[in-house]
Amino acid sequence: MQKDRFKFRCICCADCCSDKKTIVNVTYLDILRITKGLNLSFNEILEILGFYIYEKNVSNDFFKKMVIPPIITEKGNAFVGLLKKSTGACIYLDEEKKCKIYNLRPMFCRTFPFIFKLLNLRSSNSKISIQMFYTTKAKEYCKGISVDAPYISTKKWIKIGKKVLKELQDNNKFLEIWNTNVKKDRVKATAKKFIKTILKFDRKLKNVI
Ligand code: SF4
Ligand code: SF4
Image (tube, rainbow, N blue to C red; front, side, top):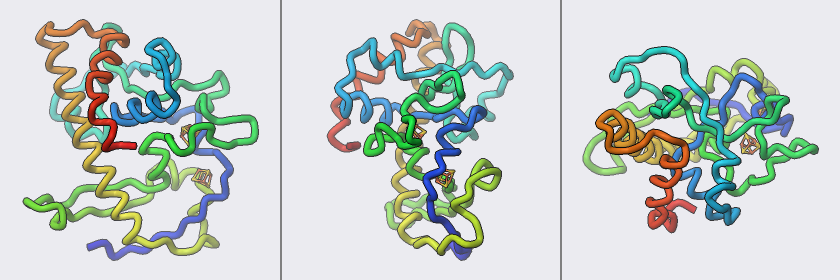
């Protein structure tokens, strides 16, 4: 049971959308939502995504502990995220600091400045116990969590958190299958093949928009 209380009121400064050092991670379901919502062609999907190479060598166990692990590509391990402009801002941030795909924005954009952690998972959904925190980045620069901000409804956010963690579990299973298939030479580790594999999951889309 979450006991801490959290303050937050977004002041729409867009600092979280312009941070050069932050990758706007996307799950495969985020990619499907954006693809469907914007009616993107195959080539257009490739144009909105960045494959950010992760240089460090990591163990399988470390992979599993990451919120969203990297995928294996022909150029090395890479995090999949929305492409960034030369300024470091997300490609979907417009001149007026507004998100051009607000209703389709990735899950991590929806949950910022919070992050959720699974504490206990029993057989039924009602028994899932989770805890929320401010993200490290939020503590670094989000002015929306200042002392002047009002307390948020923890109950409401925990509900969102449950949905997010479920989506992350699905995503990480998908990434694990991808990485295993690459290691076993069952699939060519290119960005194009990765997108094609995701599009096969299109039938699930009715549940995610
Ligand atoms: S940094 Fe914080 S206050 Fe600024 S847009 Fe992002 S969530 Fe809102
Ligand atoms: S998708 Fe929208 S909310 Fe998310 S980082 Fe880009 S501009 Fe910001």
